[in-house]
Length: 76
Image (cartoon, rainbow, N blue to C red; front, side):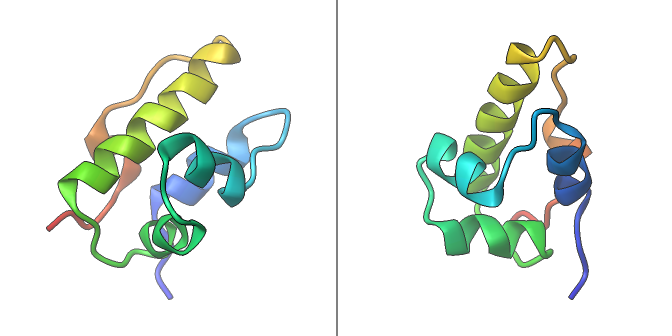
């Protein structure tokens, strides 16, 4: 499976953030988040929920926010 930039962005966060952490923060099922991370098509709504959750985690760590295009998702 092709992995998106999303996985790299998640793995760069310290302390460690799991797929489950982001899925929960985004209000998504774990499988939905995993599908996004592995390059499967996601809805715009799902992509925005992931972006918001990831930017919240980044902000808590003093890291600059990212844009939707930075996630490398396949949005349908």
